[in-house]
Image (cartoon, rainbow, N blue to C red; front, side, top):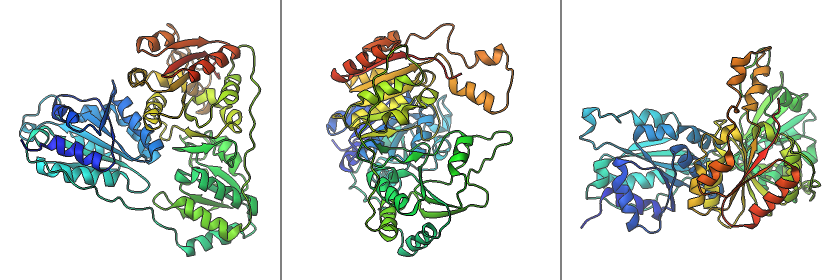
Amino acid sequence: MGTNGAHALIRTLTDAGVEVCFANPGTSEMHFVAALDGVPEMRAVLGLFEGVVTGAADGYARIAGKPAATLLHLGPGLGNGLANLHNARRAHSPIVNVVGDHATYHKQYDAPLESDIEAVAGSLNGWVRRSERAAEVGADAAAAVAAAQDPPGQIATLILPADASWSEGGVIAAPVEPRKPRQVGAATVRRIAGVLTGGEPAALLIGGRACRAAGLRATSRLAAATGAKALAETFPARMERGAGLPAVERLAYLTESAVQQLAGIRHLIVAGAKPPVSFFAYPDRPSDLVPEGAQVHFLADGGDDVPQALEDLADLVAPGTEPVLQEAARPELPSGPLTGQNWADVIGALLPERAIVADESNTSGLSLPRATAGAPRHDLLTLTGGAIGYGMPVATGAAVAAPDRPVINLQADGSALYTISALWTQAREHLDVTTVLLNNRAYAILRLELLRVGVEGHGPKAGDLLDLSRPDIDFVRIAEGMGVPATRATTAEELAEQFRHALAEPGPHLIDAIVPPLL
């Protein structure tokens, strides 16, 4: 018996280093599912909703540094996963989507699930291709893996008609070498060096891979030598933090706070990030956050080797200057009822070595950067695209990528409800994810935004749309129903005890931490 398209696809993926497929399959993908047993190198992880599947692939890519595959059912399945693919796009996470489609000869009948998959996939501004025949599938898969890794990383979507999957004639393709990041030229480095040493107030705004150790050290050297302000993008895909690394402040989410951070700057040097803009439009507030009259200078963009460009710049401008490193320091364990601040002190006091923190704490997490700055070295994953419901799936994928590291999901209650079925996947896969669910029974961020857009004196109907009570949601019972042990904490002492226990015991845990809302 020959090789069908599905087998050629999976074998090509594994040969190219894609070892995990997060999946929520349907009828058009059944031959892909059947072929998995013939390729033991591919790990298949089931998600109960496509937003969990795509978010897990994002989390996996951020930690593993290479693509996972997703398996999605036709256009609606891709559509269900789109929000977390949007976040992944903003994170520049390499992901290979395999989206099943109707057999080529069946599409003419406009069956109920027929849709324009290319249009949905095209909204991600990535790579899209349709395999028309079994013989093409392997080569297309190899091209997809390479495209996903095109610096700085992107979403690659391969559309797989059912008959291209089940037909014989599949050909396993050799891996395609992905492109390398571009090197920033010496002339550009010299030009930026002149800006930094020109005597006018300057700031460095870093993003992407510059938020890892090498980029942070080079940025700190530059700031120490020149007096430039060092800032990181508001929502980095992966930022290394903690004792022994430079503590680079993130640009604030709130427009008015970001304006204060950048006040007086005459030159903004951008490396691996975009010039800052307000997340939304607000009456009488600027959309462009670059101070009036300031010049923007581009050292490197996402497709460049940004850490190397920063190191080259530091070697030119700051030879012999050492980075300023964060000293080890932890908050004292607090006591008393949980508040919007002291829960973060509990996490900072107890955060384990080499933790991966998937942060979707939203308004409850305002004090988190301070509380964890001097904690043991850890990786921070943030909500890059602003589409909520990312935290639980990303934590799931991160735990698959790094089974030897503790994963901490700091999770707002409203966002959790978008993708809470990720808990089931964590239980099924025995993943070491500890979820601290910040339960304030509100869309507190929207209460804040209601005020910031100038709405005053709103009535009960508006309030109801931002309220998550009546009835209160029992996250302990939900978690237990999905196979995840869960507890509830109302005091700092309870949170500390339960957090310690969850970290010490293998497998997933959830702590329902009852905190007051911001507003």
